[in-house]
Length: 94
Image (tube, rainbow, N blue to C red; front, side):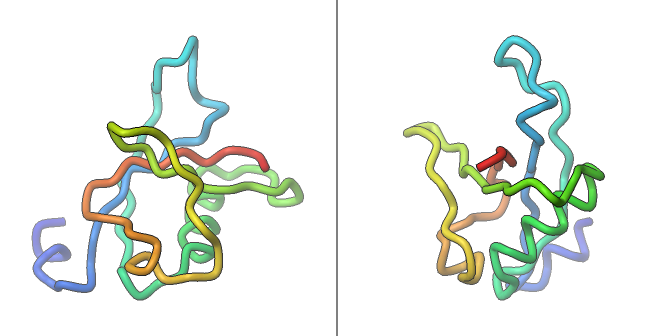
């Protein structure tokens, strides 16, 4: 992973599927490589593939930061969405 992050277009994010929470404790964050030039839709699809969930449902990404959770807009690049290296995300049903 260290060589991956040497490219300025690369970042890692920590998504978790909301359904894996237990009493508001996150028990299943995973690390995912991403690129600033990929779209938020591509990242969401990668998360859904990783967690192997039913893609017939509608999902959205929440960006988890100390000042609160915010919905990540779809169809824009990760850079435009303001994601940073090491950000935590939650995948929730919309």
